[in-house]
Amino acid sequence: MNTIYHQVGIKAPLSDVYTAIATPDGVSHWWTSTSGDPENGGELVFAFDDISVVVAVTANRPDRYIEWTVGGKPGEWLDTRICFELEPGDDQVMVNFQHADWRAATDMFAHCSTKWAVFLLSLKDYLETGTGRPYPHDVHINHTVFN
Image (cartoon, rainbow, N blue to C red; front, side, top):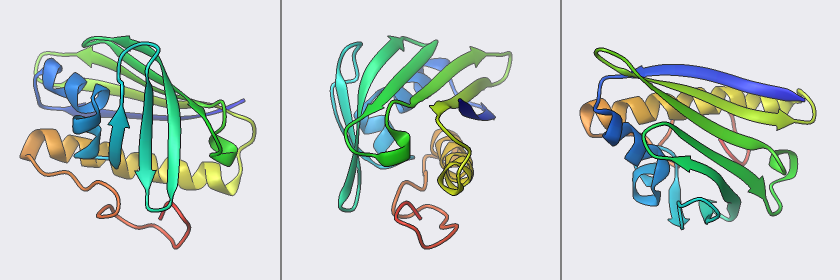
């Protein structure tokens, strides 16, 4: 199995970082339009134009850890896990990110690795400046369906 790893430090209160990642309203400010139930056992839907990614919320530990397991029809994302571990520090919160359990390191894997970096920087901007760059206003890296 293959895993995308990223880490970003964010100068914001831990509770704000958690809320931005763990709630539909928060995610909509830095990744994409989101709806659903963010609690353990809930389901979230992330919308990208005519494509939706449906995830089960497999862990939601306030101010510590959020994990989603991808279901539905997202191709290579199926059964992968999207994980955010929050590590508070003196002047920032470290967001340790993983998109785990990819079956192969494909072109889509490489694309998603770059896009996750783009969106994690959008999360940082949202929390530090008040303005993120969620889809479709994100940095476009090529012309595929997820930009």
